[in-house]
Image 1: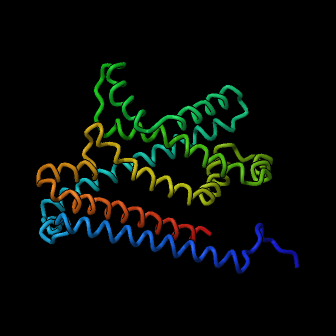
Image 2: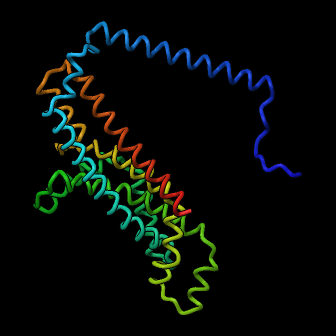
Length: 266
């Protein structure tokens, strides 16, 4: 029977060596964790009086408000970047050379720029050029959408290229117009294929929304920082730990939703 494996199975010596390296890394990680806990305990950071701040209603309501602001930015950014990314992907695959070249330039240029630079450019450059003010919310959303549209475009293009060409050709031969062919035949299949990629981008956008603190948008991270400034530096570790837990919970929920949708769509 022909083997389909693309690598050689490790032998006894390689497996023993891998177990030793794994055990050594685990010991080192455990030692670092114990040292960190002991250091924090010696500085009274782990005292219960400091961590009880997370049970105060004012702190909880502030963190939840910051979380809602983060989810609002992430949701709007993902939807807009999906729409814009789809149009850019279609332009990239267009037979019109000028449209394909323009879409490629858009993708390559924006993928090479830091998100923070785009956010600053929108927040500071847009009022300077147009004379109109822009809110911190839309400046943050615009910066994230510009960056994410390039990644979404490449994800959509990869999904379209993975489909058999015969489907589109058969639909055209049957007289199905391009828009209907795209909406009812191609796009549903593409979304199924790139769904894990889209969820990964959603998780990344949710974390990237924390960049809003540099322009004063009160999201989850800035809310935690403001709470520390108000309550005192001794509460920095508990509050930032609470912020980290909220980010982890959101990312786990998105990953779980992706798993459920993948099983249903398959």
